[in-house]
Image (cartoon, rainbow, N blue to C red; front, side):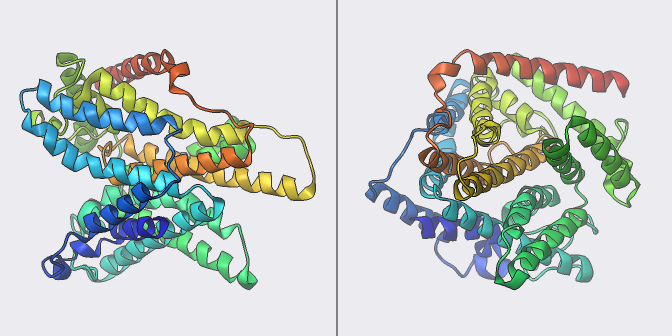
Length: 423
């Protein structure tokens, strides 16, 4: 089952099935076939767990996606959402059940980083020659892209930012006369260069946020703000689209307009929204914000469920980082330090993803839910190794998530009003 999920992850990221030269010759939906085999293996296994609240939340979110289409007048859309988002729920469930040991979590990180590095190398070739080995050319003549779900430079940059903490974590383990560390350092350098070549403002801002959060963890808030400010100024001085960032610039203004329109869509249909995948039917641009997109399309019900799903993913590694253990012996202390490093890596990957996703409409993409599955699987294993870690129970948070949902909506509304007023 775990091997099949790693193969599935390779197919999701490398995407040979989307290469123009192979797309018509394969003859079988290889991605769906591998996922189906993994699902059969999981159903046949005895090691099934639904202990984490994310399992229930994601299943209910799928139901809300389906209901959102029905209440907006298209019953047939419910089946479309089931076929579209159902495989994502299956992939999340299987990987979260499979990647529960430190070795399997590291293996999953290994696959993520190696595949992302391959895509970055493809981008480097693309930048040099104008076209990559997939046959895909540059976007807008200057920005690297890939095939399939990564044919947008912003998606490519999001993947690289998400995988960067994993590459640095893997480099910290050493071994093989230092060659292992050198390999992962090289992978991290390739990912950094790939982020630059995507010329994605969201990815560059996410990179600054990622480093700032890491400095915050190590040196405190003041050092993080100082470093983050310096890093942002440095990036804005570089020849990139970030140097053009201004609220009055057309692309930035278009994003703010989309956020405003998304909030208006929510206000017109506050319970179930305008229906999944309906944003672009009512506005010429996408939402350009993963939170606004869920709010507009699934209403406060879907938004609260999705926010709780995301929130628990952040709370799990944070629970490990906040837990204090008295020294026991050198071996036990070293094992706990390794546990914290893994938790910190997953937390930073989540931060990198959502820092970029705040400026992109990436609420439903498979990448988010595979990362979430890795977090859930890791925490399930961590609780087996350290039973003192807290159990997250949705019943205890039935008030928390609606309150945070309303607070988030108010924050988004005020933010948009301020941005529009200062434009």
